[in-house]
Length: 247
Image (cartoon, rainbow, N blue to C red; front, side, top):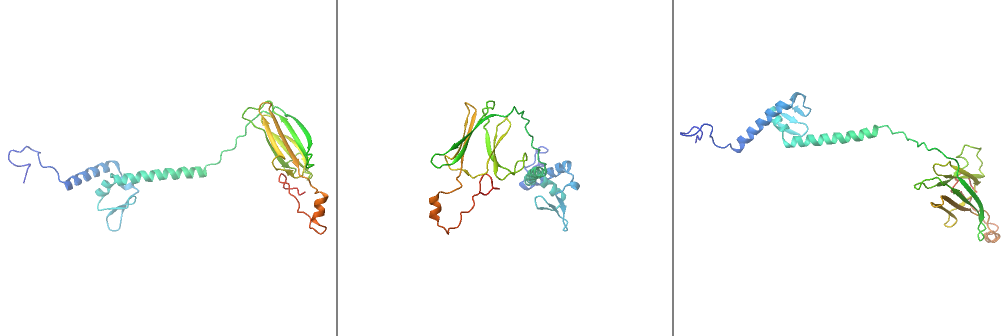
């Protein structure tokens, strides 16, 4: 029945569109909008196949004409895939940029050295084990509360101040803004057992204390007799603080 041209009806007062007519009108509006915003000749995802139909390389969809493809580009699926593609390319660009970005040079802090700290070295001996050791007391009155002195053993082959001597090694102490000081000690194996090697930093007096003992190199007469005259000699000991020296 003609609801628009019937007698007594007002012009333009036709019936509601059906669902299919609404889809056709919507797709036509989207096509017109796409024609205004998209240059189909430069669209990287538009492709015409050998059958004469059109494909979207991004969404892998097939379209019968250009209008159908243009309407598809304004749809939710195509817009979602565009957003995902842009996010992935941005992420890949960040990774590539960080991989090829040159490493920033290490900026060395310019700390004004104020001189050498005061120190005191005392020879000690364990009355029970007869081990010989050294006690170091180094004072750092001008260090900050966040600074803690450090120490380490250094091989004679690491330093370049004097000719290397395999009979000696060096014990270094460092804390800014003081100069690093080194003590030349015998290149013997250091006893690292608890109670044999210890250090302490007193923040109240600003004094760093370190004490260690050398391992005894010779065994007692009873131990040598128990091993027997034909026993093989012991394997050489390697100093863990100086791997270049075998005692």
